[in-house]
Length: 100
Image (cartoon, rainbow, N blue to C red; front, side, top):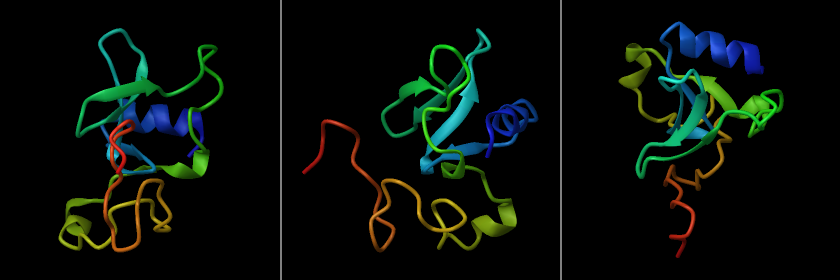
């Protein structure tokens, strides 16, 4: 997803993920777009300081599936199943600094 589409989706109240469903893009009360790793609350800006280059590849961002799709939890990452941090079998990634 291009940057403008990510921002528009977040502003429209849609849930946007980066790489896998553990990362959520949101807008804080200061108007900054952030990517948060939900399990530990760690976050990074959506873009570089200039606000133009994504901290991630466009193809790694996706909008959460509808509730109907939630009944089929087999797809927990990007629509093409190639999300970052997703091991074969769907196991999630460990937070940075806590790798085994």
